[in-house]
Amino acid sequence: MEILLNPGPVNLSERVRKALLKPDLCHREAEFTALQNGIRKKLLQVYGLSEEEWAVVLLTGSGTSAMEAMLISLVPEDGKVLILENGVYGERLRRIADIHHIDHLSQHHQWLEVIDITELESNLSAGITHVAIVHHETTSGRLNDLASIAGVCQSKNIPLLVDAVSSFGAEEIRFSDWNMAACAATANKCLHGVPGTSFVMVRRDAMGYPHSRQRSLYLDLDTYLKQQDAGGTPFTQSVQDFYALDEALSEHSDAGGWRQRRSHYREKMKIIREGLQALGIKPLLRDTQVSSVLNAFHLPEGTDYKTLHDGLKQRGFVIYAGQGELARTIFRVSVMGAITVNDIERFLTAIKETL
Ligand SMILES: *Cc1c(COP(=O)(O)O)cnc(C)c1O
Image 1 (cartoon, rainbow, N blue to C red):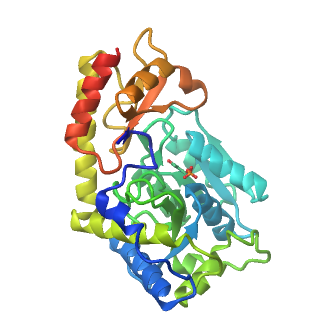
Image 2 (cartoon, rainbow, N blue to C red; image 1 turned 60 degrees about the horizontal axis):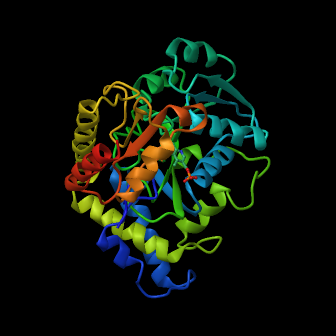
């Protein structure tokens, strides 16, 4: 089996793969309600959130559908969102705001830059009601400093809308301390489920904004929340995918939760950083700036991405290209999914052979 070192979809464990074979199920039956309720509970438990204060909305769609649902459902018509951008996904948040004519201000940074806190402070005075930010910017592997950003926003009582698609389940997320109104995430990254299901975690009191206009039929969180709270679903969900997510969440919890997942990722990433360093391959960012989930590396002198990718693929490993301009200069390696330290060691051997 190919080892996927791309940032999702991930290699499945046998336990999760087998869950896909559970019985066919109608989404209007009691068994589906039990499955959906179970997943919503388990997702709250990942970060120890209370059911009174927080809710989960499950969506059938990739991570971007959760990002879009979050922005269009939580920023009211008379609201204004400040979007902090230092990569592809921050820019995607702005595209969503543009498309839906959501009033917004963009604080734009280059892809390798840190989000400027002084600039953030001054931007917050422009009638801002929400701040949208990507937690782990998968473009570069940078883990944005949510604690500092949240601190500044909280002093002005402005809630955060967080794209946690590539961090949920493996990085620290302090929902209350960081004054979060919502975060968007997906089944098939750090939770090790199957692609096709994503979700938004929302603070229940953040949902109460009066909507003079519903912005989408399919991605309106309010519609989902009401029906999911009542045990139903407005539309057909990807049932088999739910089976897999339910199993992946049990597996996540059995293994020790997000802290354990993070230490396992860190262990694997350390081997990769050290192994590549020994081959003269340098990381894009310092180890204090990166996530445990994915790191980016400079392509070795005289090797283009395609050569490296194809050589590794022949040997059973799939790496990931840089986006935009970075496609010519970097490659990315993720350690999500059911991959072992031994797989990582074999990967380093494969890189040596390829070079
Ligand atoms: C993967 C990812 C997404 C969602 O991408 P999809 O292809 O829609 O699943 C969103 N944000 C970040 C930070 C991601 O890494």
